[in-house]
Length: 311
Image 1 (cartoon, rainbow, N blue to C red):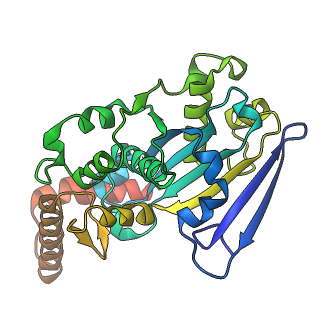
Image 2: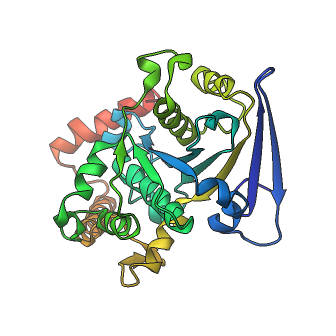
């Protein structure tokens, strides 16, 4: 069985030989994130949280321009929970990777901002569940800035309004910021706690720290953790978004999942889809007729060349 919401995956790391053992524990029912984290609740209540988000589109610019293939994007976020204590490296570290899976949700995500906000939302949910306001640290200034703007609560002004409003309702403390990518400025053995936290969040977000990987930076992070046990959990972004309905019962939804774009953008998308379908059908119906010059000399010609070159 895959390591999805039906399993929780306990990952043990041993530094000496970089041995990574995955021990999936299968359960008979679907467990919520809270049920899976229950075993760590006492640890979490005395911890701090680091977050990161990522969005990547693996199509080339040419493929995007000529629509040679459909959108293939990877949306993920990460939450890393470490102890407040000075010897935090010798204590439990809990990592959560959040991945968008359904087409309904993935087609709404067009930038990393949404996943950065989703990571902070998940951290705020964990903080609320732990019954104590934990310190949350992010490397995304744009989300922090927008949380300070009251108009961002307005559905008309911002696609992620429902996520931002939920964060405000769940978390009253000021979110902290730290600089990203410490590996670009110093060696791993020079990292402070914030460097480790944000670097681990970035690594988990990219799926490196939680599996046997060739990523050099992730291996260096593991070595510096002094054989520390790292407990990792995978959850779906849809699960995080559905939690919004508990505090915003009248949120706009599609397929019972809160929207993360504006209604206007959905309307515009539907209009573009309708236009494209009618245009394509019109071209099919007039097969054999002389097409417009601009079609023959630009899109069709360029698209044919790109396909011939395997772009």
